Image 1 (tube, rainbow, N blue to C red):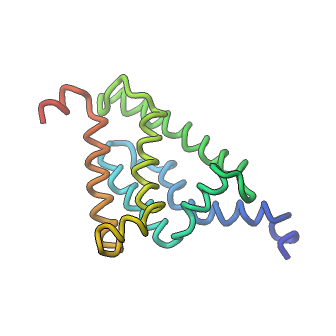
Image 2: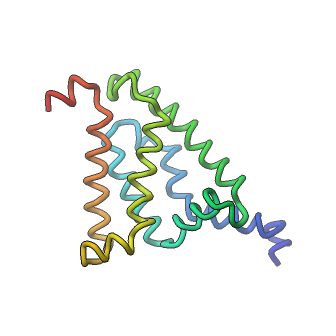
Length: 163
């Protein structure tokens, strides 16, 4: 059946990745990130998506960092798509004066991915440390905080220092 519907195991794996990441990929094509205020909502979408698929971040890490499992080529294609869309988005934000003109979009993207993925990858460790579950309410609050940190860090220097 796998061969009939997906061609091979890698095709099945790619479809699973596409299905999980669809809400996040849709955001890249939307106007949500046309201002820095959209980052909080993007963090919320990310955490909700990963909460519904708790093993997904470690699976992606395993494929990319440890070269285990199929789908590496497909994940790289998705990351490159995100990279190109991020560049387009940040070019527009820079033109509108909404973010610092000298920001390196690749550094911004890596910072975003770090803030998004780390809480999910280290969830059991953090839950043990804080002695509470990182449930939906917790992740909504974390998304708000990370969105505010992230947005503030992107502001032009004159605005960030005056606030």
